[in-house]
Image (cartoon, rainbow, N blue to C red; front, top):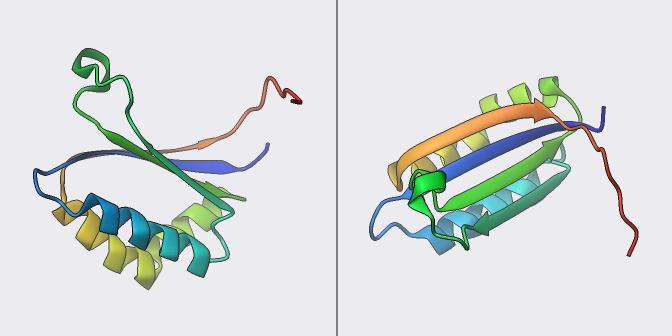
Length: 106
């Protein structure tokens, strides 16, 4: 197993400070050593039929499910999550082990 991914999809409220929320997430990822990597992006296809209104995806990588649980309870995450939830209309979060089936070398 290559680790555990914590994937969060969000639909932000109109007027939400999305750039600040992303910046704060970057800071959180740098501050907590249990976070091995942080990726994020905005939906480029804008197809509500399939995206169900979610506009942004955030992916955090951890070594184990125990590390994800520790992250969820960490005071810095708890504080951040309050701000994040306040700026969103809806959130979807899943945690899953990664399985790598194909690796390419450029």
